[in-house]
Image (cartoon, rainbow, N blue to C red):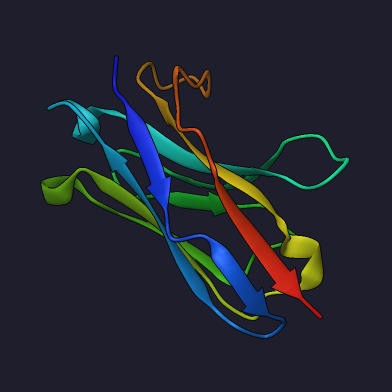
Length: 118
């Protein structure tokens, strides 16, 4: 089972930027599709961004054009570059891994808090 640890969260003003990192343990990271999810206060967890093993990516409409997901297989790390942050981006951000290629995520991190002040 791959272990995931997120970092990079914090407090930022609206319009600012943050880069989240998710470090994976194990030697099979390159075989996983990876994604970021978030859960805001009083909200359901929602999809943010996805990156395939081959590098193709998808984004939620709410972050398209502002967030960029990337991966470095040599470092077993997936990133989420967030810019033009809005207060509604405030949430705990989780990274997740999918080993079977069916969007059924079987590895999850514990999350990192992102707070955007207005």
